Every structure is written in structure tokens, then in C-alpha cells.
Image 1: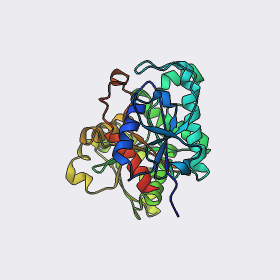
Image 2 (image 1 turned 30 degrees about the vertical axis):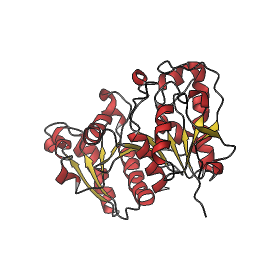
Image 3 (image 1 turned 90 degrees about the vertical axis):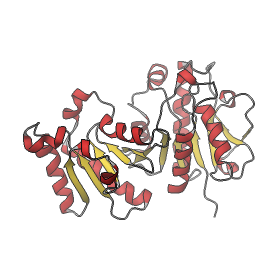
Image 4 (image 1 turned 180 degrees about the vertical axis):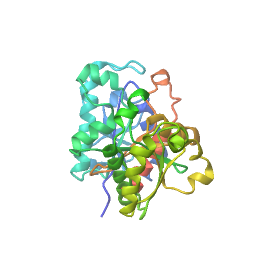
Amino acid sequence: MTRPPVALSCGEPAGIGPEIAVKAWEALSGEVDFFWIGHPNHLPKGTAWQAISAPENAIGAASLPVLVQEFPGNTKPGEPDTADAQSVVDTIARGVSLVMDGEASALCTAPIHKKALQVGAGFAFPGHTEFLGHLAQVPRSVMMLASPLLRVVPVTIHVPICAVPTELTQELLEDTLRITHDGLRDRFGITAPRIAVAGLNPHASEGGHIGDEDLTLVAPVLKRLRSEGLNITGPLPADTMFHAPARARYDVAVCMYHDQALIPIKTLDFDGGVNVTLGLPFLRTSPDHGTAFDIAGQGIANPASLIAALRLAAEAA
């Protein structure tokens, strides 16, 4: 039986999403079956594309398969139009519906511009991850950044650094660890995932000399999960977790806040990192970069992360 293709939502049409979608098609044609949900007017001039009426028509297509989504705005590269905001949201929802119905094997999402969505469509979510969890009706989902060199999960994501100690609760940490464990086992085939957990404070609080959160909040959760058989180490000093010998000892690093997780992976593999959402009833990947309005439409955007995201989606699916 032929596996359904991967759905690729267009993201912000004024960003680099359309041009890297074309470059990804050129790189992956014959290797990964996928189709693009968007409006062909947003594709670079001269793009070879074909309209499809159903995802199955994308299998073995000779040119970029497009499931056409109408957009009302007059989009220009580098100039987001808030009139397009609802259509951007609709492409994501359409992709979720197709993968939930089994017509697509996984969902890959191009970058969105959250401010444009908030202004133009009243978008009430911090980002893709939370919106996808809402559409799938799951209580909590987890963002993982993955590359061949490192996998990382931030427990708190898009919150100010001053709010991290308040946002970080035992319930949130435990849910994140359980979802991460199950995701690596079920989506990536790692039978007994090795999870390394970073401390919140420098030197993981150094025995309580630099704050006590790692002793009173983090450590009890890890002890409880270890007693259930999960392979978890920590809390560990974050500054010694990411050199090569340390990375060889775990399958994923769970970090307490956004930059603690994302700086290491973007330093090690800026172009190859893939955003994976764990905890959903379907597989979702995304390139680990933004809309890049400053270079949109110039044909110079690097498609490496999107290519990696589509490959990972196809392989894990």
C-alpha cells in the first residue's frame, strides 16, 4: 500500500516559505512525496507546478503539487499583508484535517509571522505548537528541535526570562518529560529513551548555593519518574551538557527555558535543525527558522532546514 504524501502548509506567503518549498521540491522529487497548500501566485515566477484536487494526486507528480488555498491579499515578498492572515491560519487547519483523516502521512509547516496573524486574524496562540495542540484537542504538546547532532526540548518556551521560574511547575516538567519519552519511543523508535535534564540555575543550583529550584522543584520530579523506570539523569549543569562526549550519553536534552535549549542546537547545526511537535496524534515537523522577510523573494534563502523537516516527516511517518 502506498503511503500518503506529506502535507506542507505555506506559512507566511510574504516570507521565504514559497521559494524554499520550490527548492525543497527540486531536491526531494522522487524521494519524498509531498504537496504544498497555498496559492500559486505566491510561488516564484517560472515555477513548474500542478494543481491537485486531493493529496493522493501528489504521489509521483512531475511538478510541485499544489492544493490551492485562496488568499485575498496583494502579497509581495518581504511585505506581510494582514488581509492574508486568516488564509494562513486556514492552511494550517486544512493540513491538520488532512493528516487527521489519513489523507496525508504527516504535516510540515513553513514559518508563520505571529504578529500578522494576531493583527489580521485575532490569532490567540503563542505559535504553531500551541495552535496545533488546540486543533488536535490535546491538553499539552511539546516542542522538540532535532538534528543528527542533538535533540533538545525546552520546558518553557515563548515567555520572558523573568517569568520562567513562575511558569516552571512540577506538573509542567513532568508532562514535558512524559510526552518527550513517549514521543521518542513512538515516533523515533527509541525503545528506552535516555533523557538528560538541565538545571534551571547555574551549576544546577550548586547544592542550593545558587537558588533552590533544582533541589525543590526539578529533582523530585526526576526521582519520581526514575522510580517508574524512565531513564532520566539530572538536574545537570547546563554548561557541561553539550560538548560531544556529553551528548553521546543521552538521546534528548530537556532544558528549562527557550535559549538554554535552542542556542546549543543552533550553534551545532543551524541549517539542519528541525522543529518537531510531540504529543500530537499525528507527526508535525517544521524548519527551525523564521520568515526572513529581509531576503524574501531574492532566491537566496537556504532550504536545508525545510528539506530536513520534510525528510524527517516522511521517515518518521
